[in-house]
Length: 269
Image (tube, rainbow, N blue to C red; front, side, top):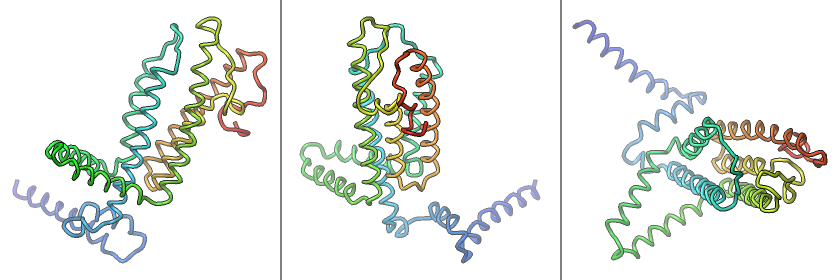
């Protein structure tokens, strides 16, 4: 028992010391390892002096705000825009996949800063609850300060937001077109070839717009996080696969389907 305990303690101290020694070596190849270790070791003035850390937190807040506008619009469209056929069904796997996606996607946008973001929201709500209406001017001042921090984000975030908005706008238009088709159908189960907006170039422009939306989020994130790249890869793979099946269905369903339309990527696929 004695020798087992001694050995365990020695291994623990070696395991704790070795990463510090490695991170201290003056090698550019160890830069990422050094930064990762510093992420765990920061405290006091080192923790609070990191302007990049504050920027990363506000960048994550920005990404989540963009994601929220997408989720809320999709919710509104599901309730008020789409006219689903009474015979329409979804496989339970598709339903569970959707639940997983809309839980995992926002978390993927901020996974490296989740504790800080939760603390930010909790502090904001606590301050509003405690101060109440009697301190509303102070709360409004803090809120304006938050907006000012968002406006100080870098050019890359605003380029990503512009790409996001482009996809968001076209997806809204395409969903409106799809929602209007059933209103003009003779029977509830009739299908009509959609026209307008990006439907003139691809069969699934709403999927193309979704890819543009997540490309915008990827650009706005700075492209530094592998998790967001994996999220984008999943979105592209899933939508390209579904769009290809939709494109083939259109060709089988309609004899006069426009021959100049691609499945999802204009002039490519």
